[in-house]
Image (tube, rainbow, N blue to C red; front, top):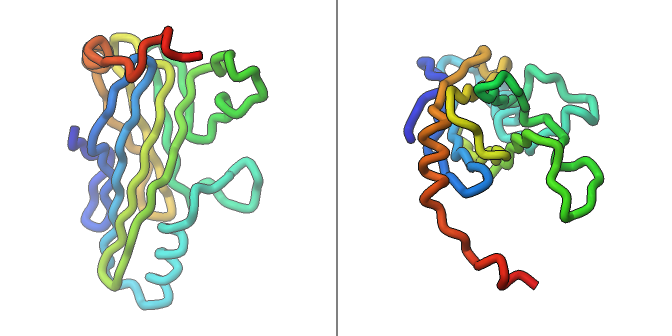
Length: 173
């Protein structure tokens, strides 16, 4: 895909790829921060925020401005965010969650004296309908205001139509 959600002289957030499945899709996300004139102490503080494990904002103690936030808006106006807990609500394993689910899963990153980078995935369920799908991100402490891109839900559905099951349904016991 290779689309920038946000790009400045010091910070970039991009959707690298979208992997489409029959029921939803995974967005591969990358973000990078470039050092400018920060003193070593300030750079170390930024590094600690940049590489913080996936926060549990609902647990308190972490300000929303200090974390990378993701959101999505379906063509019908339905919204979900990476802090949505729909998939974690207690339900039987054979029950679908109350949708939509938009789950951020960090992968890792690295950094040095001049720059830092990290990546992760975002799982979206269900597969969006045809129409404009708006992906939103914000990370105030990294200087990124709310920013968004629009994807075509029709293209995602067309890609899903060509997906193949790993195993036939009857093979599941």
